[in-house]
Length: 122
Image 1: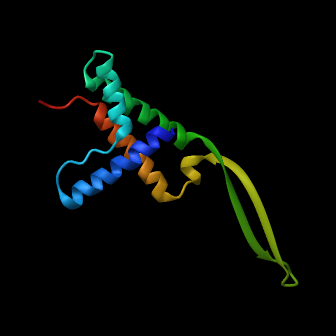
Image 2 (image 1 turned 135 degrees about the vertical axis):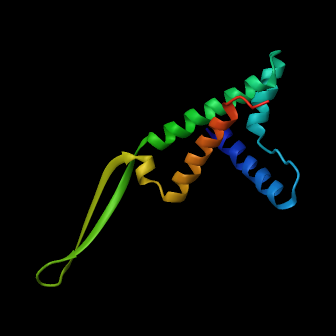
Image 3 (image 1 turned 30 degrees about the vertical axis):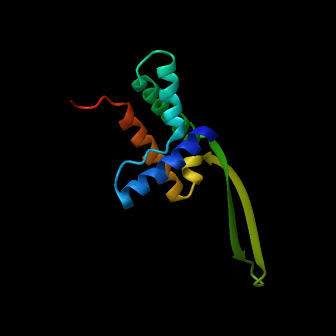
C-alpha cells in the first residue's frame, strides 16, 4: 500500500507539472516498476501496467469499504443550563467517515485506474 500511495502521489506531481509546464512527466515509479518487472519476465509492459491498475483498484476499493470508527459529540443543556456533553463512537465504512475531499480523491483514483485497464481505441 505504501508503494502504491507513493507512486500515486508522485504520479500526481508529474500530472500537475505537465499541466503547468506542458510536456509529459511520468513520475509514478510504482507503475514503472510493474512495467519493468513484466519486461524482465519477457512479456509486454502492458501486462505490468494492467496488473498495476488492477491492484490499485483493489486497494482503493478495499480501503474505502474498510470499517473504521466515527466519533460523534453532542452538546445539550439540562433544565438548569448545565452543559451536557455526550460522546459516542460507531463503526462505519471509511467512505462514510472520510472527509469529502478524501472520498472524491480515492473515487477518482479508482475511476482513473479502471480507465488504464481498458484497452485503448486504435
